[in-house]
Length: 199
Image (cartoon, rainbow, N blue to C red; front, side):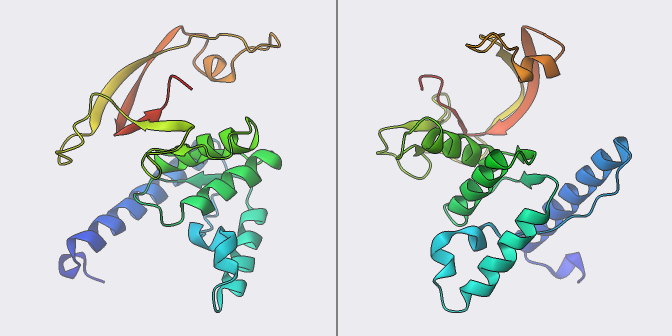
């Protein structure tokens, strides 16, 4: 398909997929591995999708793909469509020691899953989806304007301080080890939501 004839939305989606494919291919080359991308529709991993007419086959096929993967990358997105499937993917990966990289909404799904299943906060959620949750583990960033959405994402570098260099059991923080025991790191961000520092 000629990109010049695509709608802006389809063109943006095509560019995003191309970018994702290129970055994961380059990452695999850096560690001298051959990349075999397997695409899974997150909504097909949801329990209620299985009950849809004709959904049983897609549900089964999606979980077979998930179970065959050596690692899972859950990219960003907007809205609730497929979010519970992303949460289910995070749970599967955590319980089966499958590497999981959550980007943007994929990271939110990981935080929600852990909060629900390991901390016992059954209603844990992102305020993007449930503003009334008693356990808002992901929140709209206070410095962002809720009324004017265009061009308001936090962009660029942001300092993050490690406040706990060791876990309660004395083991070192894996995140801090990855950053060579730095006390503060500077990373690029582009988002409106963040993990709730009060939870």
